[in-house]
Image (cartoon, rainbow, N blue to C red):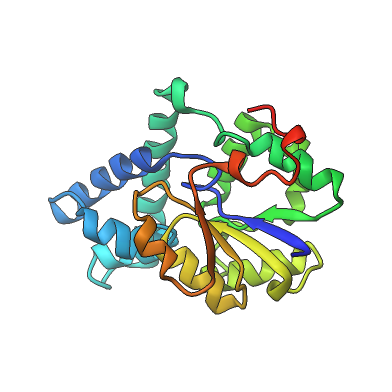
Length: 223
């Protein structure tokens, strides 16, 4: 392992409930029904907004429609985050793990399906610029076909071949994309209580609860 790539939502920041609430609002607007647990777990988690909205519109949405509802969903999402300050923090062990990687001169970045407005929100709220080279973060700017392309770009940004990267993910689609991109060392943050399912997926080497379980040196970990 020569480099590390983090997914963000559900991996570094446990915000699953906020996304569910926001997507439910969009689903009610577009389909007049809430999303189901099955489609959230198998189709939506870790997938770019335009794909989800297109699915909700049965493939008939126009580009302006998709952009409109994507932006609206994220407005709802950020509002839910701010209304719940008790959970508005990075996963336990995150900052210690970042420092541990820095000590060992191991490059790391983020590959997220979030849009720029959310990434800016996270950078400001969690002081990510203290640890990450912001210019190397990969997010949904509309140019990536899928998360596979995002992971490949993220590896390129930190100057490490994707086959030499460790990727942290939390969703089935994200895990599959990481593996398809060429990463065979994937650690899953089990926020969905699906450990048995995750362990069977190609490339998954470990399933954990938070980053206190993976610090290289326990003396680095205060949490």
